[in-house]
Length: 115
Image (tube, rainbow, N blue to C red; front, side, top):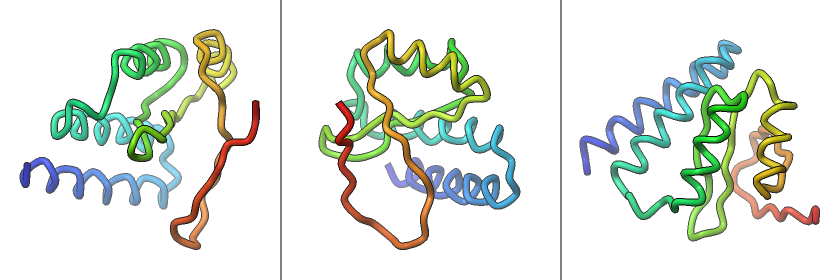
């Protein structure tokens, strides 16, 4: 467990570095590395439906991604070079898109009110 958490911390620093350098491809790949470590540490953090959506995303334009959030209220976040194809496939699978952006104000509650 502790070793896994040290790896997660390392990946998090690498994600920060990739974003600061504007290396979005590396950012996408590191999202997947982070997700893999999370699943190793906590296999119950995913479901067959999430795994199916994740695999489909990687097959349809996503460079990488991970599940973000906690307690059953999270969402899948992907980085894709072909966002149009990814959006189409996720929509076909019944996933709803939630647009987001980065900010520097800390944590806050967000609601997806799009139906």
